[in-house]
Image (cartoon, rainbow, N blue to C red; front, top):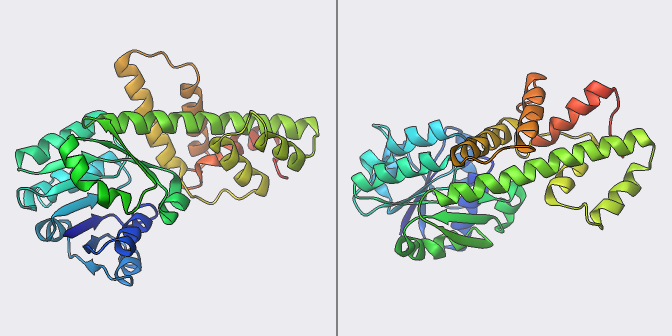
Length: 295
């Protein structure tokens, strides 16, 4: 089978390379960054010349792209996947979208005789690299079963959550929880710092007690070291949380916590931290209070 992979950057690249390592499929890649392409072709992939070229050549086309606008252009544009792939091609999008965007993609694919799975992922670059990323899949059950071996080649957990749209629902809710936990961790660590406790000892307590979470661990690791280099950029986190809040508004759920976290992200982006890690929201507290949380 020929598998096309469009978008082989920080997240897509490791997942694509796991497909190359773990399957016998012929993999064709395309990205705007030649260095990202080379990291895949060095392992045996071939390079496509464009989105259209990859779509024409492959039986399955996968995308991993940063924002919905780009996903829609790549999938539905005149030089995109649906206009150039042959009928019967399966399109799998790993990006984070609004449910409405995912449904539009599926409708566009269906109109051209393509099957689509939305398959957003969670776990970050580290788990994309070691092949334990979680994939939440929305789409037709038969199509899901046919592509399950491919998805398992780069994931430790693949969950079919229902029709197209529900993958996005699951991803946005998961990320909302993670960001809220991270923001609570920033506030908690600052309280600890200003109270004068040994931060390494506080960290040891929390990591082994009920306050622990992935959001806490990410925040503590970055903040205590003072290293906010991006593993998941604040701009992307802001986009995901904004989409989650739009979903909450659509279904009539009042927001009491997540909107405040979104405002914290807006403040951090206003400080010019959008390209830094999502945990750089800590810098809002540090700058306001003139205190750095370090361990």
